[in-house]
Length: 128
Image 1 (cartoon, rainbow, N blue to C red):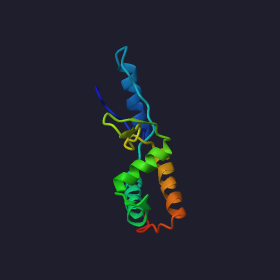
Image 2 (cartoon, rainbow, N blue to C red):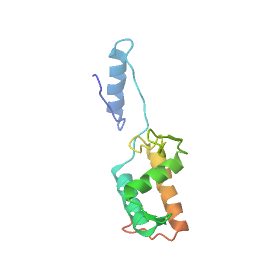
Image 3 (tube, rainbow, N blue to C red):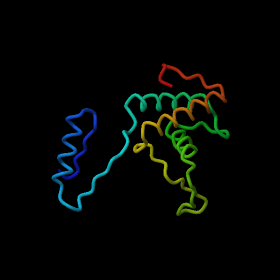
Image 4 (cartoon, helix red, strand yellow):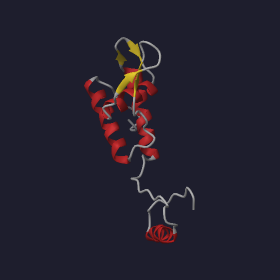
């Protein structure tokens, strides 16, 4: 059972989880987490980031979709910034989107759309 993951999608899965908990040795760690982003949310994210990347110049520079993801994630999470190891560099902390819940991911997509709307971005493919 070490490292096992269950997704509570049906009553029989809940029963299995309850059985595992009843039979687990004392000291076993059990974690409950909200569902992470869906594949559909992920597709929409990258479509929207690509649209922004193609249509918005940022302080005189064209940025990649990955760069925009960092910018939007830092904004959403109000990222802290610390000095880097090399002089003149800064590092934003807490930038990962892989562990975002579906709700956080929805907030990220809304932020991207609001930003794009302010700058006249045309989102395409119905995925943006």
